[in-house]
Amino acid sequence: MTSVISGCDFVAGWGSGICGLVVGHPFDTIKVWKQTLPETSNSTRVMITLLKHEGFRGLFKGMMFPLLTAGALNALYFGVYGNMMRELQMWRGVTQATCWDNEPYCRWHWDVFFSGCAGGLASVFISCPVELVKTQLQTQTREPNLLAKRDHKYLGPWDCLLDQYRSKGIRGCYRGIVPMLWRDIAASGVYMSVYAHAGQRLPDKQVWCIMLAGAAAGLISWTVVVPMDVVKSRVQADSKTHPKYKSMLDCIIKSYRHDGIKVFFRGFGIIALRAIPVNAVTFVGYEFFISLCN
Image (cartoon, rainbow, N blue to C red; front, side, top):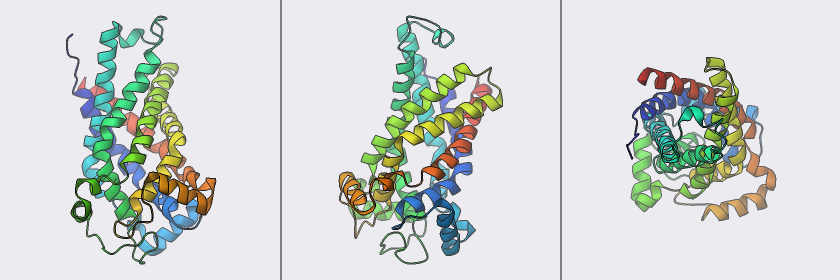
């Protein structure tokens, strides 16, 4: 079988990842604060608290490390997705143009889903240390122990990453990988499935159609995994020296006992608000760079 590995998906993923990050990071900071604050607050109050303690720059805390890696992360995700889809199409003897209308090709929907899941699985091994550092820096406040008990104030992303490594080796850098696997694999499959189906139903690739399909993909895929995102944020924001949670399951049990079932939907509003513009911009960037590459 002839290889269909293409670099275009990696290039497009790189450019679109940076676009989406710049738009979405302030929303992400508010989301992480809302999910990790001890008491329940609405997003507006969380933003006011954040601005009060950290100032406007606080909205962009922890952005540098993701900014350096967002291109590589999205390149890996879209690269794995796009190339796996082409391999599956070649294996089945169909082309992208016939996938939707070809009656015997009912497995196309599953191919999109599993290719998305594969992209999500591949990207987790890069994104987990990045998410850990980002979350630690986002929840590091001027007021001691507002969000989590800390013995060390990090000077930047590399200081944080090295401290995690010195503490528990490579495992320390992958704290929270279990909830991330549960979150990202499922969400990635849903993400690409919604985008692919919406793209087939909407007119030719005009910008507004791409934005609408991307926004729908982001909103629906995040809605599915909000509870696991809350658990991920809490585990990664936890102190390494005075941990509140021993594991993902321990976090779920303690969070439920303290705050009830509603705790697992904290931050849904800001997640939805963030998902729409971020993923609209991400897919516009992706399609733009794909067209340039082709």
